Length: 160
Image 1 (tube, one colour):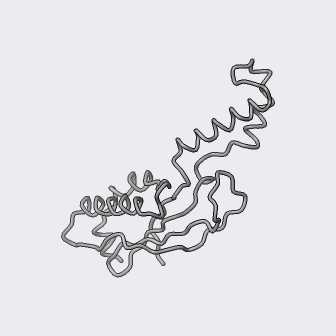
Image 2: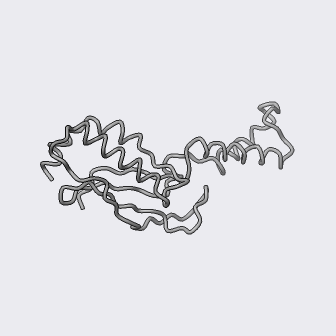
Image 3: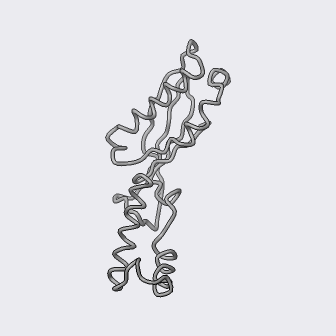
């Protein structure tokens, strides 16, 4: 398959993830009888423990799936690869991605302008994000929405 773009699917939004981490940090401090308001020197080791053992960046670590876009017979389609884990937790040591499903996003219409093509493709992805299997998940379209408007979609599709 000749994939041309990948879109990450996250367990939750970045804001929700950071809220979860903040709650965990507060719980850790409470369990140790400390407070974030304590003098910095007195909580230095606790913060170091948190940074080393609990905190992880959201990007990459919270990905639970990937949408891989490709062209087939004049259609934009995507394959969905997702984690094989039954429970999707914040901390998962073993991640194994497996093929899960394929979706038709849109058919190529040579009468569309490149920007109309992009708008339809973006709308199709946003509609896909509302499907049952993606509810409660976050499909990160940021890179796609930054790059895709600059693609000459008509020329791109003509080569496929």
